[in-house]
Amino acid sequence: MKRDVRDVDMTPWPGIGGSIWEEAIFSNGNVRYIVYYSLSKDPGARFPMEAGVIVEQNGEELAHLRCDAGSVDSGYPLPLFDAKVAAGQVYSLETGQWE
Image 1 (cartoon, one colour):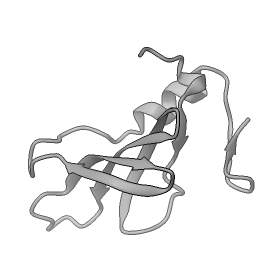
Image 2 (tube, helix red, strand yellow):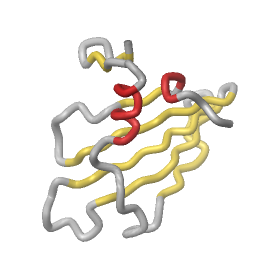
Image 3 (cartoon, rainbow, N blue to C red):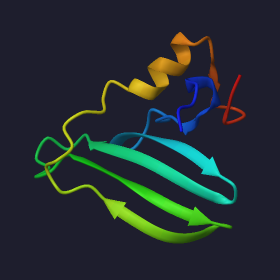
Image 4 (tube, one colour):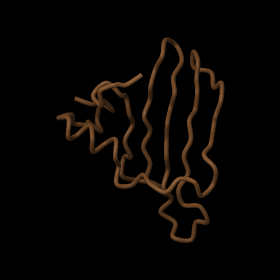
């Protein structure tokens, strides 16, 4: 199902930690699909980029599908964050919400 970027929930990287990451969250009824990637800031990391999809239903993890190591080579800069900003949304670190 195609969705407008303003209707996609996402958690952007808060600017701290050992990796740069973001996740997009899609819902279909009581099932949530969390699509994520993480880019390690460690220059010696063997596979600095990892990604996957977590499927949850009623708060219970049903599946965690990880991308093959080395198969993900994009992410930063933050593409979904940039798309939401371009659509006129602003993320509030205080509330954890898009406004």
